[in-house]
Figure (cartoon, one colour):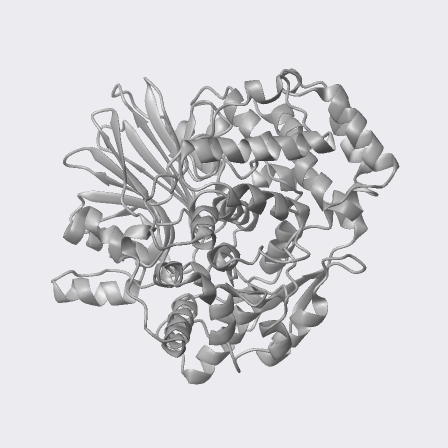
Length: 612
């Protein structure tokens, strides 16, 4: 897990050491254990790397890494969990390895299989490989876009990095605003991450499941992974279906316990994180595998005393079941302003809330020298956690909008119309020009996928949430917030084998009798506390935003609204926004619905004030 960067000067001029050093330093937080650089023979291409050492933490895993024959050079961010199996296969074909790292396995896989290696990987990655003979550059991102890869192509150069802000602040590109992307983010904070577009006009995002070649100054991009093309056959009986889910999930957890450094988990007390830690405990009892981390009993729990989203009692139950002594981090009103500007900067985009809780808990892992966390991300969008009573207004709105659409541009416009009408009815629609100036929906990964005709509305909706809207945004957030402290997050529920299997299951396996994630709950019978396994309460891992905006954040919101930011004023009816925020604050009427609708505007104004 690392930060990667690269510069290709397309007219042949030399990449200055200061240029690649500056770009790499802008992702230094992602790799606190060292840096490395590599220049091509004519020095018109340079790679930079910041290392978070997890697999083969000694010199053997240093990057940029050059193949044994000197032909290929790689920079890589992520983990290939099945690298031991791939290594044995490659050794049988004659490959010789000099290190114990998964990075070297990727290089050998490239020599053996080229692009075909991608479908063999079980993991998460963003990588770039340069061929010194052909002078061609290959870049690729994992199936679901867990690890980020941003790039910009100008007439002068091609440049890439792990984060948007690194490119924006590098001085290598035009950092002007993409106005249409900014408008769309304020209308729908979940409507851009699965697209190519970003807030910066020149910066593009290589989408999940895509790869890219740079040949003779031209980019060739193609989609190498489409989940719907890989749906497996499913067992005939429910008993067999549950057993297969259990096998896949247990193996997904076991693979992600491979580490040469201590690992842990962020434990909320909900079903997902509890299932992960209880399965980690079960894996130890059944016998640890090669390269598994012996030091794994680290559970970190964020608690919110007095807040509506505190789940400490459930977290204590799960930790006791797994025989782990948890570390608690209390987050209270005083933390509303803790490192607020840094948290917003580290998140590096616009969201529906202030992600302090996640940022603070990953900082706690770093303080305890735990650099890997197995977390429960992906389960909600895979199996329908939001479809229940008591969900937040933001999720209700998102699901209502998703319910009317399938995969067409017309349906996406319908989503926008529904959302706009709901917002207008509440008096919280602030974009200048109204709907007539809202740009059309951006093309998103999965939009045009042809889904099985037998699928009902639920499976269609989950497919879109997983690939196109909700999950890509959540993955972005957790990547940024964890890597701000040099923490690697691994996600067993996003093992591609488990994803394709679960996607193929009938809807009744996911939501039935008022229970979401039914197949997973059945698979975890007798393997975790019963009160958590069959609990209906769903609490997102969020900061207590209504409480904070009704109290300690009031002064901050007022100061943000008082700032003069011309780019924001051109987009937003600021007077209307100010009146609405003032009323909510003075009457202490902030709730989750208001937060989800208004926070993106506040977040956007904060970002635009610092964008250039």
